[in-house]
Every structure is written in C-alpha cells, then in structure tokens.
Image (cartoon, rainbow, N blue to C red; front, side):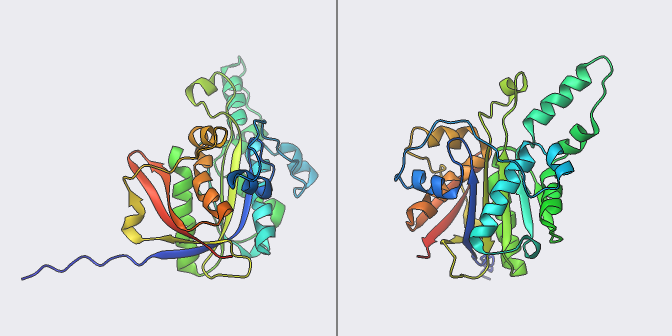
Length: 278
C-alpha cells in the first residue's frame, strides 16, 4: 500500500494596502520608502515621537512611548488605505513594551517606599498600546496582542495574515519596540524606538502596493534572513526587533518581485513572496 501524502497547505495571499513607519531618521513611510529604495540617504537621527493628538487630554498626558508610536504608525497606515479604524481588526506585537516605563517601575521598586504610580502600572501591561488605540479611535473591532521576543514582527505578521485570510477582512498589524535606559540597556541593548504598521487586505484594491504570499509549511525555512546593504539601515534591522521588517518594506519600496526571508526564531526564518501591484 502506498501511503497517502500529507495534504499540502494552501498558500495565504494578502495585499499591503497601507504602511505606517516611524524610526531613527524616518518620520513617515514616504521618507522610509525613499531611503529603502536608495532615492534618499538614510539619516542617523534619534526617533522623534509625535504627540498623540487623537487622545483626549487626560489620556494624552499619561501616554507612554509605545502608545505614541502605535498611534502614529497605525493612523498613517489607515489613512493610506482609506479605512476607518472602527472597521479594522488589529494585531499589536512588541518584543518588550515600553522600556522607559519599565525602567521607572524598577527604580520605584528599588526605593525605600516602593510606591508605584498607577499610571506607570497601567502603562506597563503589554496591551497598553492596544487599549489606548481603542480610546483614541473609538474602534470596537477585535484586537490581538502578542510577543515572541526578537521574533515578534514575524509572529505578528503570521497572525495578521491568518486573520485577514480566514475572516476575509483587512487587518491592521502594528509592530513596535522602544529602547531601555541604563542599566537595563546593558542587558537589552535596543538602540532606539522603531515601529511599522501594515494594512493587510484579503483582496486587491486600487490602493494595493504589493501582494504577499506565504506558501503553507514552506514559509518556515532555515535559509538566512535577508540583509540590507545600507550601512545605516542594516544596523537598525539587526538591533531593533520590529526593524526586522525592513527587508519586506524594501521590497515594497523598490516594487520588485521576489522572495523575502525575515528573521523569526533561532534557526527558523519566515519566507514570503512579494509582487508589486503597480
């Protein structure tokens, strides 16, 4: 008897309909697109976080770095895709949350009275950015929050693609990381703050920038992750977990078809095919 071959998984196909980007020397997607496409030089400049104008004043004063970052990139991606937040489920992913807030809580715990500010505490939970997103946008759509340490971007991408394909609706993926002050920085040397947001849609639209295809089990590979030739952008890719999205963003920026391999887990990378929609 010939054993049956295991069924092959159907490919997962989504379209990138909007991008939000903020990081060192990058204030928005258009600036990042030009740098990734080699049309403008990458800049060595500390990330500048905009004030979260979408939040009410009381919440605006309490918002930490991850909240400001997530709001900036998420709203940019939604605007590019021409979508309202209320319609769009979201997937938030970060390797560690708000580094400065974590530092301040450790300082408080090491003090004689060990008093922790309630604001510090509620900003310390990993889903803080997701909660503030709901307050700022009024969105009642489902929201998932996950963490996979340095593989958080790839894990979030898998989750968002699966949701978009299974549920048949656009999904907003937000991946972000912040740096830590010393002494935590010595143990977790994330050099700066970086965030990327993608609108992943199950059908092509007039705003689609690229088609992404994940080929079932073959999307997990032992092949090495793609690197960037740029001497400024490549250290970002290596140093900030969310910036491991940069090879994917470069493929979108250059409008080139091909295979992209992203860092995921130790010895196991995520591969996907990219094709331009222009």
